[in-house]
Image 1 (cartoon, rainbow, N blue to C red):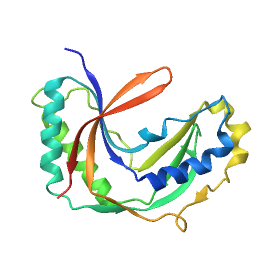
Image 2: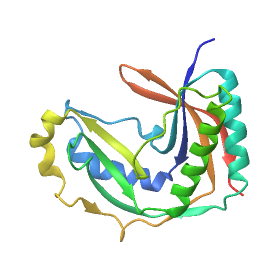
Image 3: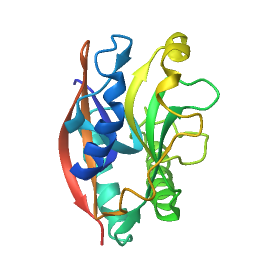
Length: 194
């Protein structure tokens, strides 16, 4: 049975994607920068790994149960910057830390780990770092950083005055299809929060 590359995501509004695209203009045409397709931009809540159909169905059950315990919340766009700070190789649109995001992520991960005791969703590996909600706008090899760093200030671009918070009312279970030209994403299920 073939396995699928599954993750849980939060979709972002088109206006925010347009803001990100605007700030990427200096990078257009640079063959060393890979800019994913704008329609696929999302915030990854949990990367689940490679799952078979049985595991994917169990994941849907987990997420539906947890979603019933969470009210919609807001995400506040913060900055566009090079990331991660110690070894820049991406351009992120970051968001203010959200206790609701962290709690939702933690609850889903806890329930997945519990399922592993039953032999399900074994490919999942919990991240050992603080939640850091972001949207990956572009990727590049670390060796090109010195030639592109002039396009963004060291402290990033502050978005707090030009973008509005947006409501998170649902989360999506997604499958990613990787190819040489980048990833394409398929929505498997949209799950509304309480």
